[in-house]
Length: 280
Image (tube, rainbow, N blue to C red; front, side, top):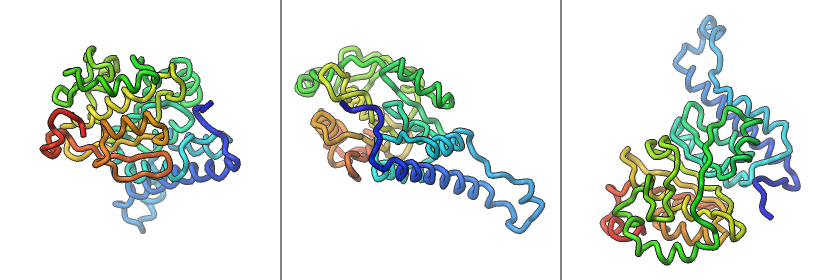
């Protein structure tokens, strides 16, 4: 049974790497923000402090002292980290709440990082140890066992069409996440990480709706630039199948391990062929 986290044979290797990664972000962030001061001005130096978010310091302590490590590998994490380095502070939406959440929030200092989780009890468990995180509970209308039928039938539902391309209140499209907090709908997300909900047994929600909804959010972007979408567990049939249908192989820019990185342009900027009846 797949759990929300794992204990590798040498957990300290990844733990130390995570702590070092976050510490590096803190130091670089502080250097950039204080670099305008005269470097040889002793008075200024004595008064200056490296500005950091409390969540960054909490993350360093947490990963430096914990045997529990993120589910993604260091290589997979590095893909998202490279984008966060260039985009932070940004709007970062994460499907899934777990032992890696403190890391993601700390890598987006002074940005907006919001987590969407299916299990209310799990939300309470995680926030008890990491109260700085922001998370909402999501109700999914799908089950993994419905994946093939949903993929085969969504094209016959006009409300699922990319021409409609909306989520809030879209009752007719079963793939649309219709009951999210207004903040999710009203924010243009620069990065979206899909590492939930559960998708490893028939009654689980599966990630079909998360993938579809992330695609709609990206296509509806009004700001300049692309939306970066990271999908984990692409070794599984449903994740791969729905990614190819809604995120599109032509937008795939990198793959490491079980993670795919897509850059989705707004629908207004898409090529002529992609703005018609289907997503890809």
